[in-house]
Image 1 (cartoon, rainbow, N blue to C red):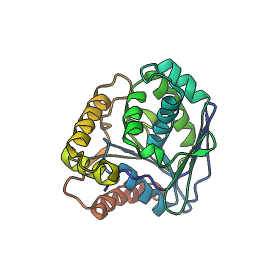
Image 2: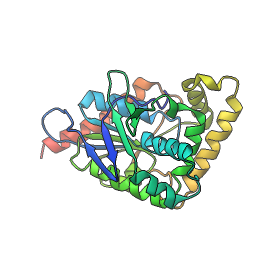
Image 3: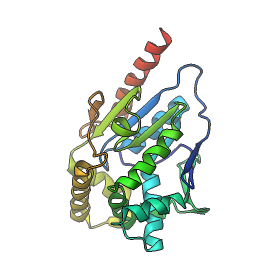
Length: 252
């Protein structure tokens, strides 16, 4: 179960983000927050849940990767948080849903395939540690989910972006398992298993120790360890949590 990113619709343009209306079943619309490290399967889970409930799938990782790609192409240093935040303000990022997966459009150009490169993935992790960048992203993501009816996955959704989300899931797995999933997701990395695992561990360290919005499970999040679980088992557990919240709301 990899971090593939199907489903959803969101736009970020000149510091503002617009969300298309979620097509959901009548009744209460929840905010579903899914956090976890790279390779844990949170993007796959988010896509399946969004499809099941007719919610909008907002991929925060795609936003960081798009900004990282633009920084690489523009020559903006990945160590300069202020310059990166300014770059975000001048960027137009769109997540366009298709029948298979989201297409990521950066300043009018589809960059979906390019965002899967290891260079962009590594750069996104470095871009995301800067407080000015995260502040812009958090503000944008809050606007996107203000009306509910969303599934949002990332690393600080339940702790920072939507601390009052009705459903919070922290999805994790052993580093070796996550490394294998990442390797299978990017065939170009054939023969580089050890390098992928090393970078995954380095990324974990950056994510868990950064000062602004570190990767940590929210106190009220339900933690799911997918190391020995199938995708169907993880999905069933998540659906159980969501149905409990929906039924509780409808009974009031």
